[in-house]
Length: 320
Image (cartoon, rainbow, N blue to C red):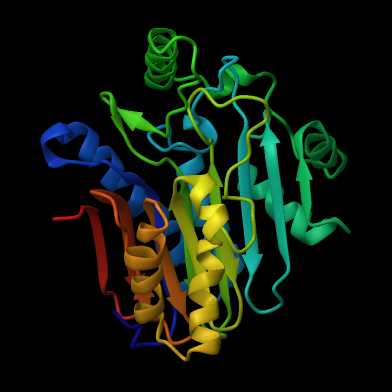
């Protein structure tokens, strides 16, 4: 898939995992497709107007953070203690500058705060209450309390996880975003190429249902869940612990840099062979400096889509 006109493109994802047609209602599928479409539209509007890839990925991710069907922002899953802790990262491929936040509880759009860290902080990664104090200092309004993020289906997921934990003699049962008792990975992300040839990546997540002790996944870790340089931009979704161990996103970039592989070759090798053999499950959306898009995943499905400058666009969910 290649951008052929004016050389801009965007690709987004809304999570990957056990996503099967037989367990997906028409209403649920439509909600996810509409969410992906709205995300791509927001990013495309930035790119069409000559905006930066960085602005485009932020805009795209914010749409999904505001949509409760996705496990990010408004739809974030619950921790073991019945709260919400969110992570996000945005990276500028032109400079390799990035901003990341982790374990924030009162930020409606964590990706917006990650961008603020990139633009305004001498540091690159802020966490918890410190990140929220930084947000307030720079005029970002926080939500009044965590009830903003409360959703009935996420609460039901936590109760299911707690029940399993109890049945399993108290052994922690952390679940990735799932629906109808079917597990799937819940993260949102976007990658983009702008008309100036610059790349950017952004990723945001609510993490794992029933996570404990301030657990942080791969999303805010550069080279794991998020990466961008002048050759490619990558946003990953899947089992965070495995993505971090594999340094999934950087592995793709390294194969392109040192082995002269194409984006498609590198992404396919890493996601479908190396990562799978490593015991990892998940996928990526990725884009290179020519506007080529790759979206491999080794799970049953991944909410995903892309739009190119010539109007070519696709939204898909299942792996078949």
